[in-house]
Image (cartoon, rainbow, N blue to C red):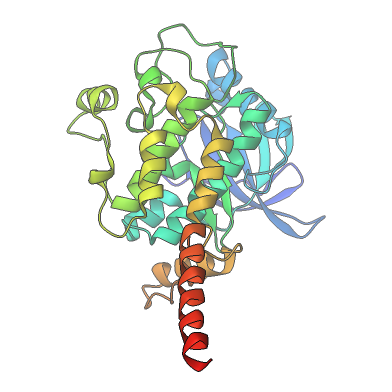
Length: 329
Protein backbone atom coordinates (compact mmCIF):
# COMPACT_ATOMS: atom_id res chain seq x y z
CA UNK A 1 0.00 0.00 0.00
CA UNK A 2 1.31 3.43 -0.95
CA UNK A 3 2.64 5.39 2.00
CA UNK A 4 0.62 8.52 2.60
CA UNK A 5 2.19 11.92 2.82
CA UNK A 6 1.71 13.09 6.38
CA UNK A 7 0.04 16.45 6.95
CA UNK A 8 1.99 18.76 9.20
CA UNK A 9 -0.94 19.17 11.60
CA UNK A 10 -4.43 17.82 12.17
CA UNK A 11 -6.36 20.31 14.26
CA UNK A 12 -4.05 21.44 17.03
CA UNK A 13 -2.02 18.23 16.92
CA UNK A 14 1.40 17.69 15.33
CA UNK A 15 1.39 14.63 13.07
CA UNK A 16 4.12 12.05 13.74
CA UNK A 17 3.30 9.04 11.55
CA UNK A 18 0.57 7.03 9.81
CA UNK A 19 -0.03 3.90 11.89
CA UNK A 20 -3.08 2.56 10.05
CA UNK A 21 -4.77 2.81 6.68
CA UNK A 22 -8.02 1.21 5.58
CA UNK A 23 -11.03 1.57 3.33
CA UNK A 24 -12.59 4.28 5.49
CA UNK A 25 -9.55 6.41 6.17
CA UNK A 26 -6.25 6.70 7.99
CA UNK A 27 -5.07 6.58 11.59
CA UNK A 28 -2.39 9.09 12.51
CA UNK A 29 -0.13 9.11 15.53
CA UNK A 30 -0.03 12.70 16.78
CA UNK A 31 1.41 14.81 19.56
CA UNK A 32 -0.74 17.17 21.62
CA UNK A 33 1.58 20.05 22.58
CA UNK A 34 -0.90 21.56 25.04
CA UNK A 35 -0.80 18.44 27.26
CA UNK A 36 2.49 16.99 25.99
CA UNK A 37 1.06 13.57 25.23
CA UNK A 38 0.69 11.24 22.27
CA UNK A 39 -2.73 10.44 20.85
CA UNK A 40 -4.33 8.94 17.77
CA UNK A 41 -6.46 10.72 15.18
CA UNK A 42 -8.78 8.66 12.99
CA UNK A 43 -9.53 10.60 9.82
CA UNK A 44 -12.28 9.69 7.36
CA UNK A 45 -11.43 9.86 3.65
CA UNK A 46 -12.88 12.82 1.77
CA UNK A 47 -14.21 10.54 -0.98
CA UNK A 48 -16.47 8.67 1.48
CA UNK A 49 -18.45 11.64 2.73
CA UNK A 50 -21.20 10.94 0.20
CA UNK A 51 -21.73 7.41 1.52
CA UNK A 52 -24.28 7.88 4.27
CA UNK A 53 -23.88 4.39 5.76
CA UNK A 54 -20.11 4.86 6.22
CA UNK A 55 -20.55 8.33 7.69
CA UNK A 56 -23.17 6.86 10.01
CA UNK A 57 -20.74 4.12 11.06
CA UNK A 58 -18.07 6.71 11.83
CA UNK A 59 -20.54 8.81 13.81
CA UNK A 60 -21.74 5.73 15.68
CA UNK A 61 -18.22 4.90 16.84
CA UNK A 62 -17.89 8.43 18.20
CA UNK A 63 -21.22 8.25 20.03
CA UNK A 64 -20.48 4.85 21.55
CA UNK A 65 -16.98 5.77 22.72
CA UNK A 66 -18.22 9.09 24.11
CA UNK A 67 -20.69 7.16 26.28
CA UNK A 68 -17.95 4.95 27.72
CA UNK A 69 -15.74 5.67 30.70
CA UNK A 70 -13.84 2.54 31.61
CA UNK A 71 -10.15 1.64 32.03
CA UNK A 72 -10.51 -1.34 29.66
CA UNK A 73 -12.03 0.72 26.81
CA UNK A 74 -10.13 3.17 24.61
CA UNK A 75 -10.93 6.76 25.54
CA UNK A 76 -12.21 9.35 23.04
CA UNK A 77 -10.93 12.94 23.24
CA UNK A 78 -12.56 14.93 20.46
CA UNK A 79 -14.54 14.92 17.20
CA UNK A 80 -14.54 17.64 14.56
CA UNK A 81 -14.78 18.52 10.87
CA UNK A 82 -11.71 20.04 9.25
CA UNK A 83 -11.39 20.95 5.55
CA UNK A 84 -14.31 18.66 4.76
CA UNK A 85 -12.88 15.66 6.67
CA UNK A 86 -14.24 14.05 9.84
CA UNK A 87 -11.63 13.55 12.57
CA UNK A 88 -11.78 11.52 15.78
CA UNK A 89 -9.04 11.88 18.39
CA UNK A 90 -8.51 9.00 20.80
CA UNK A 91 -6.21 7.60 23.44
CA UNK A 92 -2.96 6.17 22.06
CA UNK A 93 -2.49 2.58 23.22
CA UNK A 94 1.23 1.91 23.36
CA UNK A 95 1.15 -1.86 23.01
CA UNK A 96 0.31 -4.82 20.79
CA UNK A 97 -3.01 -6.13 19.56
CA UNK A 98 -3.94 -9.62 20.72
CA UNK A 99 -3.60 -10.67 17.06
CA UNK A 100 0.04 -9.55 17.06
CA UNK A 101 0.60 -11.45 20.30
CA UNK A 102 -1.02 -14.65 18.97
CA UNK A 103 1.04 -14.41 15.78
CA UNK A 104 4.16 -14.44 17.95
CA UNK A 105 2.96 -16.74 20.76
CA UNK A 106 0.00 -18.84 19.51
CA UNK A 107 -0.74 -20.35 22.94
CA UNK A 108 -0.80 -18.04 25.95
CA UNK A 109 0.01 -19.25 29.47
CA UNK A 110 -3.26 -20.02 31.21
CA UNK A 111 -2.81 -17.17 33.71
CA UNK A 112 -2.14 -14.69 30.85
CA UNK A 113 -5.18 -15.87 28.87
CA UNK A 114 -7.28 -15.48 32.04
CA UNK A 115 -5.92 -11.95 32.53
CA UNK A 116 -6.85 -10.92 28.98
CA UNK A 117 -10.28 -12.55 29.34
CA UNK A 118 -10.78 -10.76 32.67
CA UNK A 119 -10.10 -7.34 31.11
CA UNK A 120 -12.37 -8.04 28.14
CA UNK A 121 -15.25 -9.20 30.33
CA UNK A 122 -14.93 -6.11 32.52
CA UNK A 123 -15.10 -3.96 29.38
CA UNK A 124 -18.16 -5.86 28.09
CA UNK A 125 -19.99 -5.46 31.40
CA UNK A 126 -19.64 -1.69 30.96
CA UNK A 127 -20.56 -1.79 27.25
CA UNK A 128 -23.67 -3.89 27.88
CA UNK A 129 -24.71 -1.73 30.85
CA UNK A 130 -24.97 1.15 28.36
CA UNK A 131 -27.21 -1.12 26.20
CA UNK A 132 -24.57 -1.31 23.45
CA UNK A 133 -23.41 -4.47 21.68
CA UNK A 134 -19.89 -4.47 20.20
CA UNK A 135 -20.64 -6.98 17.38
CA UNK A 136 -17.04 -7.22 16.15
CA UNK A 137 -14.91 -8.73 18.90
CA UNK A 138 -11.72 -10.26 17.48
CA UNK A 139 -8.02 -10.35 18.43
CA UNK A 140 -7.18 -7.28 16.32
CA UNK A 141 -9.73 -5.23 18.30
CA UNK A 142 -8.17 -6.10 21.67
CA UNK A 143 -5.01 -4.29 22.75
CA UNK A 144 -2.57 -5.18 25.52
CA UNK A 145 -0.49 -2.12 26.36
CA UNK A 146 3.11 -2.46 27.47
CA UNK A 147 2.04 -1.88 31.07
CA UNK A 148 -0.20 -4.99 30.94
CA UNK A 149 -3.56 -3.18 30.65
CA UNK A 150 -6.27 -4.63 28.37
CA UNK A 151 -8.09 -2.21 26.04
CA UNK A 152 -11.13 -2.87 23.86
CA UNK A 153 -11.44 -0.76 20.71
CA UNK A 154 -13.14 -0.33 17.32
CA UNK A 155 -16.82 0.28 18.00
CA UNK A 156 -17.56 1.17 14.37
CA UNK A 157 -20.35 -1.40 13.99
CA UNK A 158 -21.62 -1.35 17.58
CA UNK A 159 -25.35 -1.04 18.05
CA UNK A 160 -27.86 -0.19 20.73
CA UNK A 161 -29.72 -3.32 21.78
CA UNK A 162 -33.16 -3.63 20.17
CA UNK A 163 -32.26 -0.86 17.68
CA UNK A 164 -30.95 -1.68 14.23
CA UNK A 165 -30.05 0.62 11.36
CA UNK A 166 -28.80 -2.07 8.95
CA UNK A 167 -31.06 -4.01 6.62
CA UNK A 168 -32.62 -7.09 8.29
CA UNK A 169 -30.79 -10.25 7.23
CA UNK A 170 -27.54 -8.37 6.59
CA UNK A 171 -24.53 -10.08 8.16
CA UNK A 172 -22.53 -7.64 10.31
CA UNK A 173 -19.18 -8.53 11.85
CA UNK A 174 -16.07 -10.56 11.05
CA UNK A 175 -17.02 -14.01 9.71
CA UNK A 176 -14.66 -16.13 11.83
CA UNK A 177 -15.73 -14.48 15.11
CA UNK A 178 -19.49 -14.27 14.60
CA UNK A 179 -22.07 -15.88 16.83
CA UNK A 180 -24.60 -18.35 15.35
CA UNK A 181 -27.33 -15.69 15.41
CA UNK A 182 -25.11 -13.25 13.48
CA UNK A 183 -24.35 -15.93 10.88
CA UNK A 184 -28.11 -16.40 10.44
CA UNK A 185 -28.50 -12.65 9.88
CA UNK A 186 -30.39 -12.10 13.14
CA UNK A 187 -29.89 -9.16 15.47
CA UNK A 188 -26.83 -9.38 17.69
CA UNK A 189 -27.29 -9.16 21.47
CA UNK A 190 -24.93 -9.08 24.44
CA UNK A 191 -24.84 -12.89 24.22
CA UNK A 192 -23.37 -12.55 20.72
CA UNK A 193 -20.40 -10.68 22.21
CA UNK A 194 -19.95 -13.47 24.77
CA UNK A 195 -19.81 -16.08 21.98
CA UNK A 196 -17.19 -14.06 20.07
CA UNK A 197 -15.12 -13.69 23.23
CA UNK A 198 -15.45 -17.44 23.80
CA UNK A 199 -13.84 -18.02 20.38
CA UNK A 200 -10.98 -15.71 21.38
CA UNK A 201 -10.58 -17.48 24.74
CA UNK A 202 -10.39 -20.88 23.02
CA UNK A 203 -7.82 -19.50 20.60
CA UNK A 204 -5.63 -18.15 23.41
CA UNK A 205 -5.74 -21.44 25.31
CA UNK A 206 -5.31 -23.89 22.44
CA UNK A 207 -3.46 -21.99 19.72
CA UNK A 208 -6.17 -22.70 17.16
CA UNK A 209 -9.50 -21.26 16.10
CA UNK A 210 -12.41 -23.54 17.06
CA UNK A 211 -14.40 -23.02 13.84
CA UNK A 212 -12.16 -21.60 11.10
CA UNK A 213 -12.05 -23.70 7.92
CA UNK A 214 -10.90 -23.44 4.30
CA UNK A 215 -13.42 -20.74 3.40
CA UNK A 216 -15.98 -18.45 5.09
CA UNK A 217 -18.87 -20.73 4.12
CA UNK A 218 -17.36 -23.75 5.90
CA UNK A 219 -16.41 -21.56 8.86
CA UNK A 220 -20.00 -20.33 9.16
CA UNK A 221 -21.27 -23.91 8.93
CA UNK A 222 -18.95 -24.89 11.79
CA UNK A 223 -20.15 -21.96 13.90
CA UNK A 224 -23.72 -23.16 13.41
CA UNK A 225 -23.14 -26.88 13.89
CA UNK A 226 -19.82 -27.77 15.53
CA UNK A 227 -19.96 -28.17 19.32
CA UNK A 228 -16.91 -27.53 21.50
CA UNK A 229 -16.41 -29.79 24.53
CA UNK A 230 -13.91 -30.02 27.38
CA UNK A 231 -12.07 -32.74 25.45
CA UNK A 232 -11.06 -30.17 22.81
CA UNK A 233 -8.66 -28.47 25.24
CA UNK A 234 -5.06 -29.58 25.88
CA UNK A 235 -3.92 -30.89 29.25
CA UNK A 236 -3.15 -28.30 31.89
CA UNK A 237 -6.29 -26.22 31.36
CA UNK A 238 -8.37 -26.15 34.57
CA UNK A 239 -11.66 -28.00 34.19
CA UNK A 240 -13.60 -24.97 35.46
CA UNK A 241 -12.06 -22.81 32.73
CA UNK A 242 -12.85 -25.41 30.06
CA UNK A 243 -16.48 -25.52 31.18
CA UNK A 244 -16.73 -21.72 31.18
CA UNK A 245 -15.40 -21.40 27.61
CA UNK A 246 -17.70 -24.22 26.44
CA UNK A 247 -20.69 -22.39 27.93
CA UNK A 248 -19.61 -19.14 26.24
CA UNK A 249 -19.61 -21.09 22.95
CA UNK A 250 -23.07 -22.58 23.42
CA UNK A 251 -25.22 -22.40 20.29
CA UNK A 252 -28.15 -21.49 22.54
CA UNK A 253 -27.60 -17.84 23.50
CA UNK A 254 -29.55 -18.23 26.75
CA UNK A 255 -27.02 -20.79 28.03
CA UNK A 256 -23.94 -18.56 27.65
CA UNK A 257 -23.28 -18.17 31.40
CA UNK A 258 -26.13 -15.66 31.74
CA UNK A 259 -24.19 -12.45 31.00
CA UNK A 260 -20.70 -10.96 30.87
CA UNK A 261 -20.99 -10.49 34.64
CA UNK A 262 -21.91 -14.17 35.07
CA UNK A 263 -18.85 -15.15 33.03
CA UNK A 264 -16.67 -12.85 35.14
CA UNK A 265 -17.90 -14.43 38.37
CA UNK A 266 -17.07 -17.90 37.03
CA UNK A 267 -13.65 -16.68 35.88
CA UNK A 268 -13.08 -15.18 39.32
CA UNK A 269 -13.42 -18.67 40.83
CA UNK A 270 -10.96 -20.06 38.27
CA UNK A 271 -8.47 -17.29 39.09
CA UNK A 272 -8.93 -17.44 42.86
CA UNK A 273 -5.46 -18.90 43.36
CA UNK A 274 -3.75 -16.17 41.33
CA UNK A 275 -2.55 -12.76 42.57
CA UNK A 276 -5.26 -10.14 42.14
CA UNK A 277 -2.90 -7.82 40.26
CA UNK A 278 -1.52 -9.30 37.05
CA UNK A 279 -0.57 -6.14 35.16
CA UNK A 280 3.13 -6.40 35.97
CA UNK A 281 3.45 -10.14 35.20
CA UNK A 282 1.55 -9.65 31.91
CA UNK A 283 3.74 -6.66 30.96
CA UNK A 284 6.91 -8.66 31.73
CA UNK A 285 5.66 -11.65 29.73
CA UNK A 286 4.73 -9.45 26.74
CA UNK A 287 8.10 -7.71 26.81
CA UNK A 288 9.84 -11.10 26.69
CA UNK A 289 7.66 -12.25 23.78
CA UNK A 290 8.31 -9.04 21.83
CA UNK A 291 12.06 -9.15 22.29
CA UNK A 292 12.26 -12.95 21.96
CA UNK A 293 13.84 -13.22 25.39
CA UNK A 294 13.48 -16.13 27.86
CA UNK A 295 10.02 -15.98 29.39
CA UNK A 296 9.79 -14.82 33.01
CA UNK A 297 8.57 -17.08 35.78
CA UNK A 298 4.79 -17.41 35.88
CA UNK A 299 2.85 -15.97 38.83
CA UNK A 300 2.48 -18.46 41.63
CA UNK A 301 -0.93 -20.10 41.29
CA UNK A 302 -1.90 -21.25 44.75
CA UNK A 303 -4.30 -24.13 44.56
CA UNK A 304 -7.22 -23.59 46.87
CA UNK A 305 -8.07 -26.45 49.22
CA UNK A 306 -11.83 -27.12 49.12
CA UNK A 307 -13.68 -26.66 52.43
CA UNK A 308 -14.36 -30.41 52.72
CA UNK A 309 -10.65 -31.08 52.41
CA UNK A 310 -9.98 -28.65 55.26
CA UNK A 311 -12.56 -30.44 57.42
CA UNK A 312 -11.14 -33.85 56.57
CA UNK A 313 -7.63 -32.61 57.29
CA UNK A 314 -8.66 -31.13 60.61
CA UNK A 315 -10.45 -34.36 61.56
CA UNK A 316 -7.37 -36.38 60.67
CA UNK A 317 -5.14 -34.14 62.77
CA UNK A 318 -7.60 -34.46 65.64
CA UNK A 319 -7.47 -38.26 65.51
CA UNK A 320 -3.65 -38.26 65.50
CA UNK A 321 -3.52 -35.87 68.46
CA UNK A 322 -6.07 -38.03 70.27
CA UNK A 323 -3.99 -41.20 69.82
CA UNK A 324 -0.86 -39.40 71.04
CA UNK A 325 -2.58 -38.06 74.14
CA UNK A 326 -4.07 -41.47 74.87
CA UNK A 327 -0.65 -43.09 74.61
CA UNK A 328 0.91 -40.51 76.94
CA UNK A 329 -1.76 -40.60 79.59
